[in-house]
Amino acid sequence: MKNVFPDTRPRALSVSELNHQARHLLESSFMQVWVEGELSGFSRPSSGHWYFSLKDQKCQVRCAMFRGLNQRIRPLPKEGDQVRIRGKVTLYENRGDFQIIVEHMEPAGLGALQQAFEELKRKLQSEGLFEVGRKKPIPTLPTHIGVVTSPTGAAIHDILTVLARRCPAIPVTLYPTTVQGKPATAEIARAIELAQAHGVADVLVIGRGGGSLEDLWCFNEEAVARAIAACAIPTVSAVGHETDVTIADFVADLRAPTPSAAAEKISPDQNDMLRQVNDCEFRLANATRRALQRLNTKLEHLSARLRDPRRELLEKAQRLDDLEMRLGKAIAQRMDRSQVRSTHLTQRLAMQSPRKQLANSREALDRSCLQLGKAMERILAKLQDRLEHTAGTLNVVSPLATLGRGYAIVRDDQGRIIRNAADLAAGDQISTRVANGTITAEVTSVSQGND
Image 1 (tube, one colour):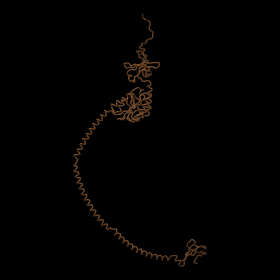
Image 2 (cartoon, one colour):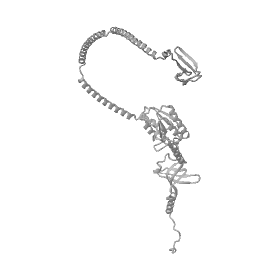
Image 3 (cartoon, rainbow, N blue to C red):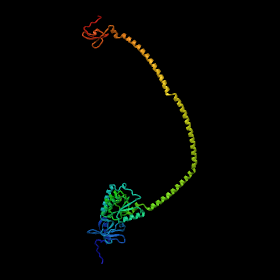
Image 4 (cartoon, one colour):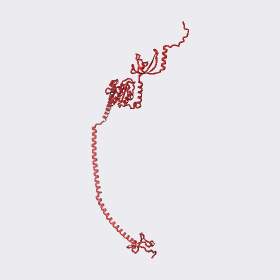
């Protein structure tokens, strides 16, 4: 019997449709999430994919991480690890399981470590510890290599293996230290200081083998970075694998991706050196042979130009005899000329003898003295006659002669000569000079005229 009434019930979704819509809703609502929790139920089938759950104290969530993404995760996670994942929230439609497709996984706390890494990196970079200008050159031919690492780790084994292959003659000194855990920071810094104080190494390798970020963290500590920066020995950082980067890599003078690579970088290859020596030996032999050929050719050329030394000596001896004879003749001629000149000068000297000149001069002096005496007598006689004549003339006009004839010279008390009676007055003192003396008197009266 057919149902003639229409079906008014709501349309029912199929399970597939429901799961599909739920998946779409989840993926559009949660674009990408970070989730942290404890790893549980970890499985790794032959396909290479990882399946596990993340849980905390109350809940858990299913997770899947496909092979193409999980191959980069080292070390492999294990049950009970605290991890931090990044992924997409989705729904596995076949079973209706809510899950996260994981794209990245790291140990829990890695974010804090990365933040501490970046902060220390910025701090040391601002102080100039990463500057290229402060980095010391690595010696191309080291005479002694120092290694700061664990004595039981793979790093020292790898370094020694490479050095034994490339250049076993270089001595190596190990400065042992732990390279993991909290005590490692101080131990590594002390080992670097010890290597510097030891003073034998001219290059220092600092490192260890691979590991997680937590395992390598001691090489990201400030104390280790500053110990490397203060080290006077050129330093090489060789920490972990090629993809691992630490603060020590930035501070060291050279960064090597692995300890083996560090040994490769700082050691010369003995085979290359042997080839270079052989090449230099070959080139030196060729250069020596060519030089000898050139010298031999030059010697032959000079030998052809070289004269017999005995002939040269005979010519020099003949020349010496000729010069000797010429010298003798020149000396004799010079002696003859000197003798003639000496005789001539002797004769001239005799003619110019000082004794004869002195005698002549003395005779001339005597004649001059006689003539001078006679001339002086004549002059004195003339002067005597002139003096007598002048004295007579003076005596005629002399005031004394006038006084002798009865005249007098009258002076006032000032010594002035009185020429006029008006110059005197009664009572004036006068002195009168006569021929044989002076009379002092007082004027009693003055009369003018010819009386």
